[in-house]
Amino acid sequence: MFVANHTSMTDIMLMLVSVKNPFVFVGKQELAKIPLFGFFYKRTCILVDRNSAKSRQAVFLRAQRRLKQGLSICIFPEGGVPEEHIVLDEFKDGAFRLAINHKIPVVPITFFDNKKRFSYTFFSGGPGRMRACVHSFITTERSTIADTKKIKHQAWDIIHNTLVSDTKKAASGTK
Image 1 (cartoon, rainbow, N blue to C red):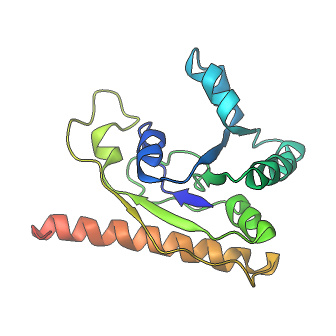
Image 2: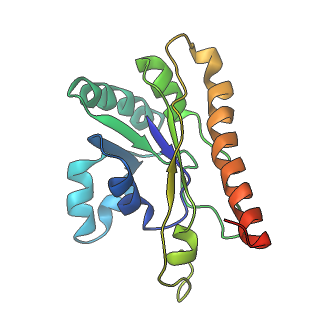
């Protein structure tokens, strides 16, 4: 289960470059309505209507099928792109419950520069490096659903602390 911070429309592309394992995204159903992009999106992703409990439940079944086919799963657990001033929004439980149910490890990934390169604010951003850090796996082998919040907070802490540390290094001029 790959989980990463969601900051930009470039996150999907950076995820495709950063992860070598074959995987499928779980993403919001509304994006399937975007012309051309939506055509490919709905054929390559597990779609979820976040307002429907039935749809969220169906994600588990579709994900199980993909896992049995040898694919990994990728979810942006913030559930959307947070406002510009938020470093990392609260995570939703779904990715972590799914990982625990299927006994697959959670792999946190930090995207550092995507917000600076291509944010959701029009006419902002610019060219430059786009860095990603793939962190150590968080095992779920012995976890139960009762451990969902613990694993979710562990992944959130890893990504958040990495982002904060990088911001402090940039402010002090160190690399």
